[in-house]
Image (cartoon, rainbow, N blue to C red):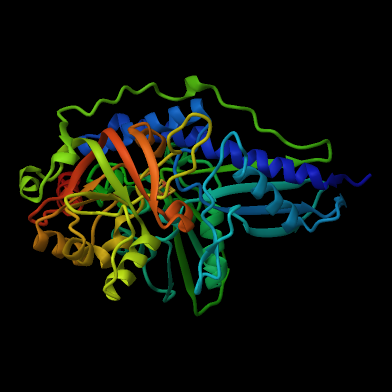
Length: 501
Ligand code: SF4
C-alpha cells in the first residue's frame, strides 16, 4: 500500500520545525561549542563563546529566537517514489505555507527578512517566504524533510572557485577563509562542496551543513577516504589561522568542516564554501503518513550553565559622552553602555545618504549629534517584551556610509558585529570616532539590556527602521579605537603566531 501524505501534515510539520530551530540549537552544536569554550585560551574569544552559550540557553528556556536574523529558509526534500499525496497545493506551496505560519506565530514572532525584486525595490514579503527548496525523488514510501534557517551574515560569506584540476584545495581554502572576515560569526562550520558543476558544488556545500558536527569522532576513528582526510586537514589548518570566535583571535575558528563531493568534468575542479554561523539551525523530519511530525524538546540540562559576567568592564553613560572622551577607550576593553542609542542598518543608511546628497534634513527626532548608532534589525516583541532579540548585524556593509555619517550627522560612534574594512577605519581615524562590537549571535542576551524601544523614523522599513533604544549595561567591546587600531587585525595575528608556537 502506498503511503498517503496529507497537505496539512507537511504544513504543520514544517511550521513546527521552524519554530523549534528558532530557539533550540542542535545538541551537537552545543556540545562542540562547550568543548571549544572550555579549551579556549584567548580571553576575548572565550568571553564571546560564553555569551553565545548563555544566549542559547536563555533562548531555549524563553522560546525566543537565538538570533535576530531568523534567516532565509532552505529546505531539502526527499520524496519516496511510492508516496501518494492528499493535497490540493504543490509541495512548494505547502512548504511556504509552513514557513508563513512559523514566522507569523503570535507566541514567537520571527523576523521576516526576505525581500522580493532583489535588484530593484527590495520589498519585504512580510512572512519570510519564499523558501529555497530542493526536491529529489528517492526509493521508498516516506517523505524526508530537512529545514534550515540561514542567517544573512554567514550566507554573505559564501565563496566559489573553479580551480584547475591540479590546484591544491587546501591552499585555496586557507587563502579564502581569512577573506571572509568575522561577519559569519565564527566559530561555526564550513560546508564544502567539491565537484559536479558550479551550481552543484554550491548546493552540496549547503547540504553538507545539515549533517551533525562529528569531527572529533572522525579524528578518533581515522579517515577512510580522501574527503575524510581533507576534512581533518582543513579542520586543523583553518584553526591554525587564529581567527577565533567573532574574529577576535583564538584557538577555535571552526567547530567542524563538512564535505560533500560528486563526479565532475575532467577539465574542472569546482569548489564552494558556505559557512554556518553561531546560529546553526536545522532539523530533520520523516513523514510516513501517520500525521504531522513534532520534534521532542531537548532537556535544558543539556546546556552548560555558564555564569557570564563582564569582568573588568567599564560602565559608560552614553548620554554624557562627547567626542573628546572617546580617546580614553582602548582596543579590546569591555564596556557596559547605559543611555540612549539610535539604530540603523542598510536601508536606513541608504536613505540618510540620499537625503544628505539632496541637501535635505533628517526626519524629525533623528539627531545623531554626540550619539552612537547600533547596526541592528530587531525581531518584533511579543507579550511584555520591549523588543525581540536584537543582536548586531555585520558592520562592514555600512563601511561605505561611515565617513558621511561621521562627517555630516554629528555621530561619534558605531556598534555592530565583525571587523571594519579599510574605508571605515580611515574614516574612524579621521573623525576620532570609535567602533564598538557586540557579540553576533547573542541577540536574546543583548535584548535583555534594552529597556525601552520606539521607532523614530522610516517606519515603512520595518525591522530596518530607525529605532531609539534605552539601554542599561549593554555589553560591548572596543573593536576600533580613535587611532584606527582594530582588534580584528591584532587579535588573529597574535593568535596565529601563538598557535604556530
Ligand atoms: S549568528 Fe551571526 S551570521 Fe548567524 S544569523 Fe546571527 S548575526 Fe547572522
